[in-house]
Image (cartoon, rainbow, N blue to C red):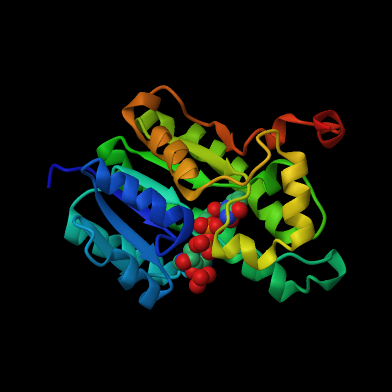
Length: 250
Ligand code: NDP
């Protein structure tokens, strides 16, 4: 029971699974939370120290039950990674309210709900929260009215958490990934969007799940013990640039 515990949402695949693996490699125990039960069971199989828990993070009742189950099994929560997310790209005119709400329900409500349910355990451990934003929350772009707005809200929610929870030694930070070839991204990244990202990113490539996981792991670690309320873009330099990169490269 003395081994630290990370709770990672959206851990069945992609960035969440890479993050769970990194914590496990470091000797932590990990509550792997996802709504996709078959994918979650497959991902957790054979991972020593992993506890798969099926939960839709947008549902307050499921979240309460999930956090209670994690604490009953693992006894503590030292790091919370709010990573579960959905992406839905489309013009503003085609975002009806149901589409808007579906994105907000997971990307924003989910972060609020899981964090709130974990606060007593995080206060007890003087733990850390890392919320996953996006470069789409840092910079506006076409087709992302719900997705980009949800991620911008996550950045501010992170600052609210840092402001309020610091007095208990609980830190809250946000990692904003650049593009990574996960199922979520490749469902909405057309070949034109892929090419545009390559053009706009100084490192001229997509990131990997493991590269994002390293940033998350750092912010959860004691190495980041005086860092809270920050937004860290792990984005190959996307946020730092303006116009002209493709022209200058040639
Ligand atoms: P993946 O689709 O690979 O993994 C996300 C996982 O979260 C899926 O298993 C998904 O299940 C699950 N999930 C979604 N909604 C819920 C929910 N309500 N409750 C529980 N689990 C849920 O995505 P990524 O690894 O790419 O994304 C992880 C995070 O990184 C997201 O927040 C995303 O917005 C962010 N991000 C990703 C970028 C990228 O380019 N990949 C760029 C910037 C940010 P299901 O398949 O059923 O939806």
